[in-house]
Structures are given as C-alpha cells and as structure tokens.
Amino acid sequence: MKLRSISVLICAFALGAASCSKEAPSAGKTAPEPAQAKAAHAPADVKPGSHEDWCGEHQVPESQCTRCNADLIPAFKATGDWCAEHGLPESQCLKCNPDLKIVRPPKGS
Image 1 (cartoon, rainbow, N blue to C red):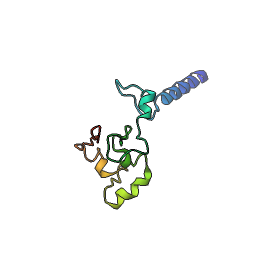
Image 2 (spheres, rainbow, N blue to C red):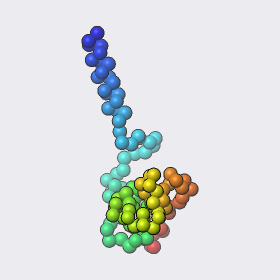
Image 3 (cartoon, rainbow, N blue to C red):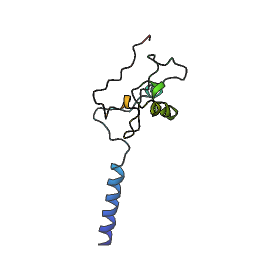
Image 4 (cartoon, one colour):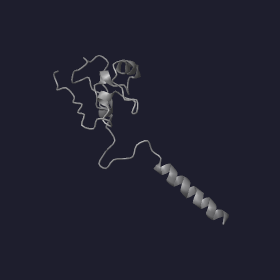
C-alpha cells in the first residue's frame, strides 16, 4: 500500500511538471532560429517609424513597444492611450480591439 501511494505521488508530480510551461506549444510552430531571435528587436539606432523599427517579438514598432521598454508607459498613459486591463497601449491592444491592424512599414521607409 505504501509503495502504491509513493508511485501515485511520483506520477502526479511528473504529470504536473510536464504540464507546467510558460507557453503551450502550437501546432506547426518551431523554435526560432538564432538569426531570427537576433532579428526580433530593432537596433537602437534605427529611425522611428521605419521598416527596421520593428519588434518582431510583439509585432509593434520597437520605438513604441512598452513590453520591451517600460520607460514608454508613462507617455502612453499621459495621452490616455492605455489599457489597464491588459497592461499595454490601447492602440496596441488586440484583445480589446480584435480588428486592429498593426502594420510594419514597407522597406525603404
């Protein structure tokens, strides 16, 4: 009986540990290549509003990405462009605005 209880606890722990992850894997989604990971964020010296000014991780302009740069938050809050429920600018909140389209500028801009 004692051995059975220990076995059940070990199985429960193993299942719990296996199910705990920060992000559930998506079907067909593969891990980013090292080159893609480097390209996820714009270099610091890019022109705001340009094609290169893009946060690949959050799909918004890098110069406006509050998830990567929390120092930008007060400016969005000051202009009333803040979704307190989701913790990002209302102008970027796809949960509140599912029809919102945030488009990366074309190359050469």
